[in-house]
Image (cartoon, rainbow, N blue to C red; front, side):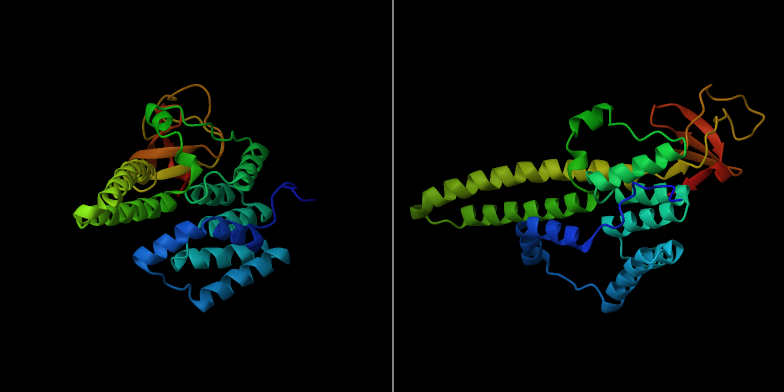
Length: 274
């Protein structure tokens, strides 16, 4: 019997094409500013093999192929999403949740991803992550509208538009004051959007690159120190799949900060490092 009947089968190629069509203007600007590089044919073949393995029910083989792609530097929301689905079907909930959390760095607002993460968490006694409630999270309320890498590309494109607008205004002749005024407005707007995009990307960099994160692999009560001899840090156990930030590492234990702001120690054997 299928343990996860609600898991979406694949991040389908049709859906990828839909996103590509919607983002055509953005991609065109990126290509103009930075050029492009093709994905090697062997990587495409590996991805297709993984899709076929999944559809044939060979979930562990599919997961191995996706991890092969990741090891070769092919990282995207689609790859991590499919990896999470493969591990979920293979009855590896810890690996599935880890892959879904990594996918959220690329496609944080994808409803299928969030639904599958919720299914795996709740099926194993976990609690789905709640909305950001910190001051920074409230200020950057749009954080989950697009992924970390998309924000970086958006910042680069907006910075290029700012630069081009500034040059256009700088070299406008005296008779082109109307053009200069328009380009000035565009430049100021692009500069403001660049600053916002950079701040948003910087916040994501701090969360994803500036800190090390783990997920809790079972319901457990953290300790006040790096040993079972220490008292519990708090009464209620931390549920399966909880995402936490590593503060310190000592003698096979992690000092962790949990989403509710509480801190405690857990043995590394009860965590999975992202």
